[in-house]
Length: 269
Image (tube, rainbow, N blue to C red; front, side, top):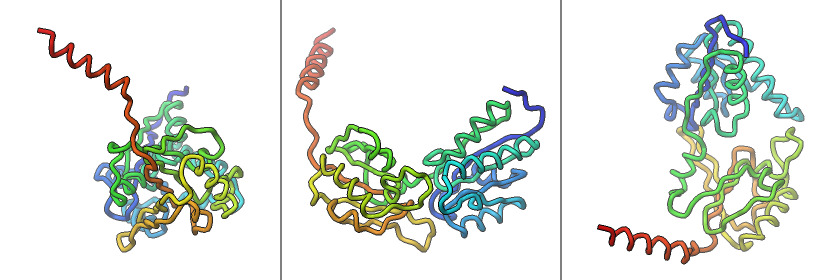
């Protein structure tokens, strides 16, 4: 670790999902007081809105290119952010949703900044997950909720509980191993459906979800059968929410042990 002698610092904040309604007062304060603001959000309108809060706002979208590895893009973002921190500036990174959810660059930039001795921290924001719970009326405490990035779910063996909700993020990128594409096609989703069919019937209802990013928009909440998923029009921002397919299974052994413990506790003077 090096000891930073300048006043450089880093704060990564979340802009939330919907323009104008999700930004916290603390996140806004970081944006307004920063010397440099880097913006990685989903919509040019959101960029313009944030640009009105600081005189030096720089878009991170310039690093994306079709056919370019996203990991190379993320490393370039981190390099740009850290160059300003090392120059002794108060830097604020503003990211879509929550800055720590499906966001490699903020985590990496904070890690490097701390290793080099600079103050660095993350402020949470409203994520797509939060919007999903609200829009679809899901209480994760009712049946439980499992979350996976779709390609990771496909590439690794995961234990699935069909009595809980299953949420697959970035379903439009299902099966991508190149990290260079912004969407994959129906043939890739056929493989996903084959995998899910090991746990769910093909006529099981699923929901394609996309949160609204502008106040004038409505969230996408498209219901279809699992069988019909491959032909859906899907992008990086789309999420697949799969409701429970079977009831919760009672664990009689644990219930009996707990009841015996309750009786013993009550009987103890």
